[in-house]
Length: 136
Image: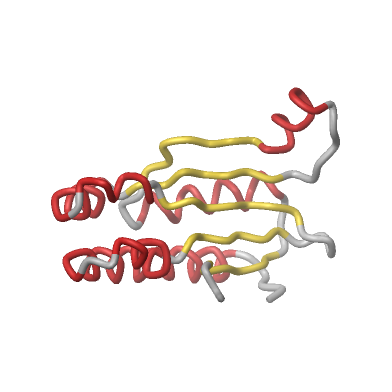
């Protein structure tokens, strides 16, 4: 089952991460948390890992509409976005597909929120791909 919206691009990891954050902001998403998985694994496990960041993105308007319809929807938020190094040296950007995740709520009132969030996140991926030489 596909559960992400994704692209793979050429570029420096930090540049692609910054471009991802900027594209999210352009679509009304703020980054609530930024987890540097490589640093966490190094500190907590003394283990090496490729560059990998998890960005917790949230669009306040959409979150409000979703929570207003279904208070427990917060367990499925925020929208996680992952920026990572691929085995071939490109940078992958994967965003959770809100239609899949929010579909778990099985509530028709959430469908419009999921569609709008997905449309916005698909534009984020298109922006990132257009701004970098696409390898996908």
